[in-house]
Length: 351
Image 1 (tube, rainbow, N blue to C red):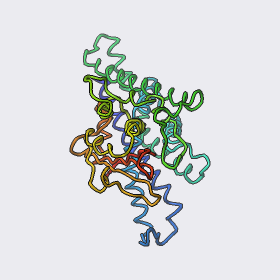
Image 2: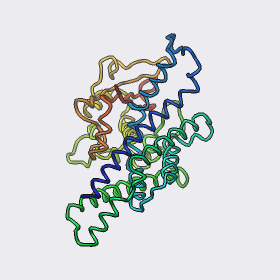
Image 3: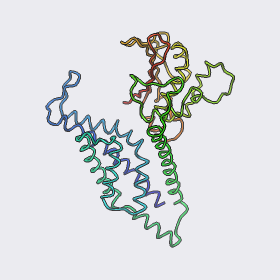
Image 4: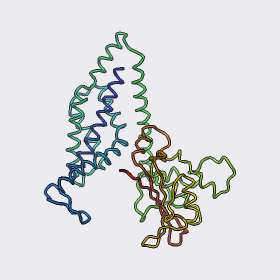
């Protein structure tokens, strides 16, 4: 039980420090721009500098922190679990760990000195806080547990701690596997555009995550459930396998593959409704929204608050994070004549 309690404490302190890092990073990142300005004009409205800085803190806690928690909690817990196991009590270890985590989380802002300085200060504060709460006592309870185990007082309940460690190892394996695919598509073999050829808005450069999705879903068949009926080919395109969708890039690639397989946009409304989306009349196949450049857009919405996250369909923790937004909107844009799908974009609505 001792190990389990300690791991829970480490997990809670890690989450707290990630939130603190996110808030401080946004705050410090805003200081150079707004601290010496009496007012900041945005969209014709003047904001007092103090309110802008408060807004940066709010943004860090409400919007930035969930992303850091989603992607960073498990890797940090694994590293900090090692510090517990090795009884690493020096604050220097934790400073280095949080510096590296901060660099990864903020995209290695080496070319942006002010952003880099904000990251370093936020990471230093988070590392010191973690060291005060857990780092300076790392391994103490574990040493006591080892002593009791040596003298025969080990209890079966401690196996729960091993279950937690096994879960963390499983998560780490997933990160390593996905990281390997990111490296593969970035430096070894870039996937082809697939069928129909996947493209993004304004032909922007594809991210590594999008390339992985293109590799995993190269054609419409790879996005469909296993055939259980002899449905007509067009109806089969509505049977998207959401169980295989892990992230937004997977969803956008598969939706593009399936929607782009139709001959025109007239099928889009039925397709979205078959997936559980709601399509407003003014953004439907019958009345698509005409953009300034003449392209035609169809929008579909999905209520996460009412139905839960559309993806991923498994994993309590991942679904919990995906439940933070209250809605999801998909915009599918076709060519001027409505015969070619140009791109698919997914946005999330968050309070």
